[in-house]
Image (cartoon, rainbow, N blue to C red; front, side, top):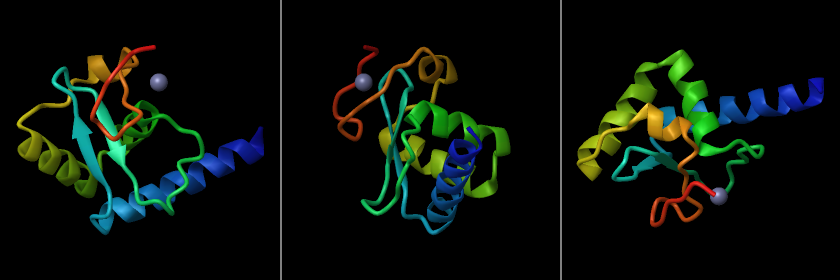
Length: 100
Ligand SMILES: [Zn+2]
């Protein structure tokens, strides 16, 4: 149990570091769901995009808000936390979306 918690925290630290280095981008669906485009060497430790997003919202760092703003400007879409929370997600980097 404790090992799992440590693995998740380690993955989140790496993700936050890479966001700071502008190596992670987000895709946004028409309805406002999110998908993270992670570098191949980043291990997400089985966290879903929704899980990662909610953890980042909790801290709401400047780098995170900056990444969201970039994604919203690029896609012309807004993140909708209700859509993120209803389980809408993508397995192909934001090309297709589903709730299965
Ligand atoms: Zn799925």
